[in-house]
Length: 329
Image (cartoon, rainbow, N blue to C red; front, side):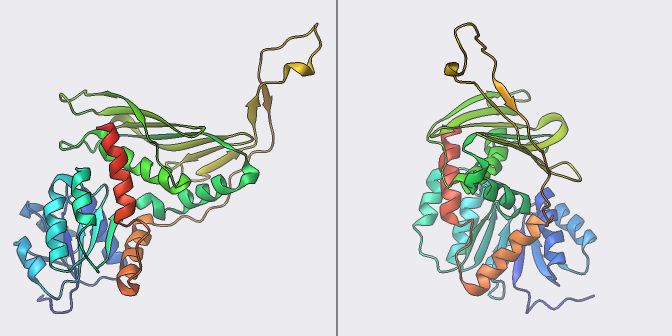
């Protein structure tokens, strides 16, 4: 079957694990055909075998940049390679979607942000487009739920193990993007305890602790864990929230319970109690409609291309995350 290529406006560069997810999502978004390129040609062939009606393999990456019919480029490539690719795409006036964290060096994103570009430039922080994360954001912003005291992120799994960046750089970028989305702020200082298990100077397990005003924050990441864990715990002055992404049902649980030390003035001189009071109330799981975050994220990208509006996760959003990651590494 010979595919017509004149009207194909999108190309995917990078056909690995995440590139495959993006390709599947493009098919679900009714992209009838799109180009793909990978330095490892066998990756492109595998992807073509999965979506034979949709994929056209391009063997030379420069042909993608030179093709005037291709208006949109999606990068699912390692951060260390992205700077040159982004510069080339901007020069060729392409709309660009870059998978998080986008770049390895903060200095590189500064160079890009000063480049004049009227085209769409979006970074793929997928959790910002997750309905459960959006619900939690509303929970945090609702003053009736009490003052936020503590937020804990846990992101653990067995792989995929990266060879170019540490686990904290790779995985905590997700959690930092969520934190920034929740509070519109990021910590000025971060304390890290990390452990290089598999190879020297490249941590596989990381524990980050920080603080934003009076809110304490912990971020725990590992790609050497026997099971998959993705949890967010939020403690307020009156409630507790637990988000367990791995659960099939009731992913969010809200506990109307909290601990508080009693004022000593409540007790006479004959009685003294150092134990905290535990208040219990009704617990519940809110009804949240599940969505496909990657699908909604890419839909947002194409909508911004069409309307020429600035993406939620634009270069300024990515810049703040990279600046914070710089404090870790």
